[in-house]
Image 1: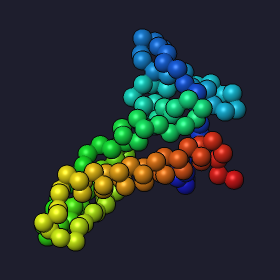
Image 2: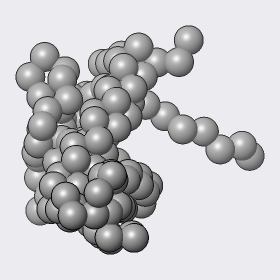
Image 3: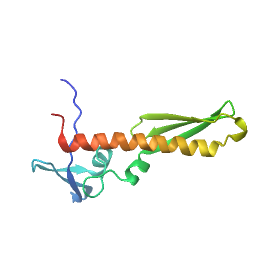
Length: 132
């Protein structure tokens, strides 16, 4: 049996079934199913109004960050995302006398968040349009 990755933009609402928390799920073709809460929440991310990626989506996708300084003038930030994917960015200055780890980390984190915007946008576009 081969493996496949699926992307669908679905509608869902919390619903109890046999006293178990879960979600009623409605697929684009009208098919309706029910999913236990933990299964659903590990597979789906709520998007914003009008099917948009939000700042909250981007921010919540970062599970952990690590900041290190190299050579007294370079900041490296490693971000581990909630799905285990890792993004690494760096920022550096010319003169170590001007170095600020906090500023370097902010620059790197902004770059990482821009990448997450792009990745989640790609995912949303695929969920909306499928892979034709």
